[in-house]
Amino acid sequence: MLITCEQVSAGHPDKICDQISDAIVTDCLQHDRQSRVAVECLIKDFNIVIAGEITSKYTPDYTELVNRVLYRIGLENAFDHYEITTHISQQSPDIALGVDQDGAGDQGMMYGYATNETRCMLPLPYVLATEALELLKRLDNPILLPDAKCQVTYDYRKKRIDTFLISTQHREDVPLEDVRHLVEGVMRDVARHHKLNTDYKALVNPTGRFVVGGSFADTGVTGRKIIADTYGGVCRHGGGAFSGKDPTKVDRSAAYMARKIAKDIVRSRFAKRCEVQLAYAIGVKEPVSVNVDCFGTNRVPLWYIRKWIRKNYDLTPAGIISFLGLRDLDYNHVSSLGHFWRGWMPWEK
Image (cartoon, rainbow, N blue to C red):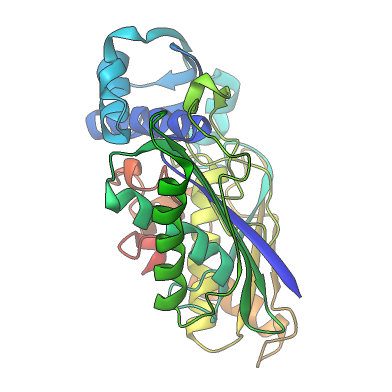
């Protein structure tokens, strides 16, 4: 069985927008812990549009936050060229009515997943793709530019990598062979780290050239990389993005809690794989449903696991925010290379 997962770099235009949106969320919460934030970003060429709803005692310096994000990505040389437009209003009072009473800010389904196939309890091809881009970034090689994507196809039946694909932006004066030599070395290092085969199909910049990248090749928008943000497509997704949302939004907070619960189920050896679904109604505190799928790997009945979840976790938005400390986090840490990748985040512990 072949399973394919992808990851994108911090310099991908959609992730630039995610990082700007989460920089705004973090900045607002650091100055006013009760801030309500729902912010989207769009980037095209040198144009950045920030739009959404913010209810807070604090007003962010959007230019400063954008510049910090661009500097972190490696786009600091373009500071003076970007034109930033903002369209910000306050949260709808109709939505605030429900949230003020600790109810969910919207309806929806959120999923969490865990598997015992890797130490971080994420799908192996997703881990390989993410590690490859992380290593590529750590190399800090001057021939490479910030925009990159990785895709790994893994054969679960044969327990081997089938295809390893990386497309990375590079300087115009660099021969493609130099790029391939560097990137193929990263692929091999990641495969060997996991004691896997290195005779996979290696694809590096299959079009032959990747000089124009970032917002000059594609328009970026917040929330368009929700599969790369989560589990690489191995489990279901409710459709709601995380970035740009304060923790009263269950799209974010309940998805983090579902991941925490799924990990705890696998850690407790109730199952080898687990997908948790939480569903909410706007203005209602408790989830309208809690569901679990262990794909036939469970050692205890599913009804027992559902009962165990209800007994051990406060699944109200306020309970989740308090349990995970979501008003005190720096969301800049999770706005690129996945939200379930860093072991120090509270839902990963």
